[in-house]
Length: 522
Image 1 (spheres, rainbow, N blue to C red):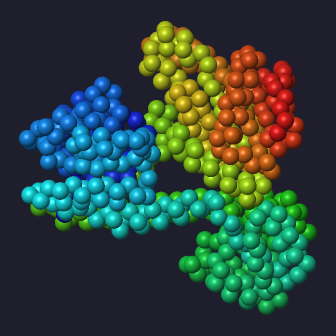
Image 2: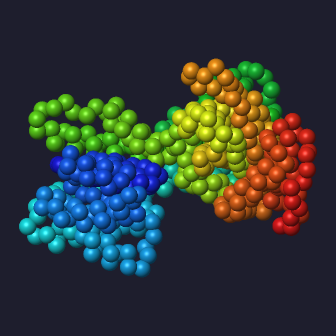
Image 3: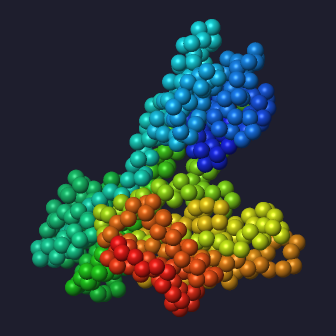
């Protein structure tokens, strides 16, 4: 099976990453050019099977480039698919009149991109009866599977979680059910070990709260049976007991318990432990989901390498193919300079977290950090030094947040931090700590004898009961950055969106209140 070569001529790096990743996963060979002139060179060197042409290119625009390619006797038969940011009236007709064989509107619909691309190619091939149609990669079924599996990954953080409570005391079960329901957990009850094992096998709960001392099969035997079953072995288990002996705890841990709670149960502690284990389980599901996405990519790639190995060349090793997949995925999600998450992934993750806030009424904070003093550094030392300092800041942020938090590069000099499960008090503490980390760091570069200082201004928005939409939350944080700048350098402005009448409060690094930016009505 011949792997088709696709040339992408696109100057927008984020669009380029997305298209490249989809095509690589679908087993196309990808070449890239950021303008028409480089594109012409790539066509001569590699003769692609298909060209994806952005209409709005710097220098020579995409339609002019298309006309030039189609006027060539050598390259006129290469299908060209036009890409444009907006479907303006007449754009499609202009693209077709210039010689394009199809038309795809940006932003790219990831779920339908490959099928749309294939449809354009088929239409082009039908209009050229003398052209030999090449065998397409086996991407149609593969992409459907990938779409389905990626949806499963994304749902790992957003679905309602199911908890099995096992206790022979019905009052204990009832009280725990009431508490967990407040946090939008679904609960199932079992009043003996035998019933618990039947429910676990049938329902596959996300977490089990298990009493040790019960008539019949006790909690230890229930754990033993659950861990022995491959289908249920990974379900987190919290043991509840009145037993305080070290021996009982060691026995529970050896059998596979994940955590302990002593009776009488403190419900705040119960919810905290449940949240922690559910979060870990969600991350594990996400990792498994990416492995599931990678599996068909790896197997199909190796199959292609095997069937196309006419020259007895070495087959692609699984390690190299795995690396190729991981690199493609990493590139699509991260900022190339700082290696933090990029703006697209930031939007995606913020959407998911706001859905969780709306459903479960848990706090969420968004922090946006604008880096100051970069213009003067650029004027004196150039962009390469600015890039070095931005990399340093990215590393500082990455090493200063929790695993559950997300740090992203929002724009050239603005970073964004998403803080799940963090109220305004916690966000205030974190923002002061990160501000100090950035401001107190000594920035330098190779060959320089001097250290440089960076200044920041920070805006923080928190919500819990009054759920904001994504754009409103970002706009509020950006406005708070301006409030901080109005107060000077290294200032932090905070807002709690839940308050009916909220006060934008501004602090310095040490937490000293320096002023009120604006008083607003919600």
